[in-house]
Image (spheres, one colour):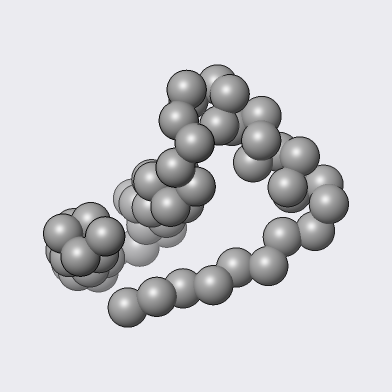
Length: 62
């Protein structure tokens, strides 16, 4: 499963700052972690577990 996200100029600048703070240049890793944190906060446990397994599958592929 591939997800494409378009960023505006402000968001690109924020992503660059995040990369510096996280000491990683891997945008995919940053987005996966952000998705996982979002899922933890907003979805019930069963759905969150499903999203976690999808993220893990993506990690294995990528």
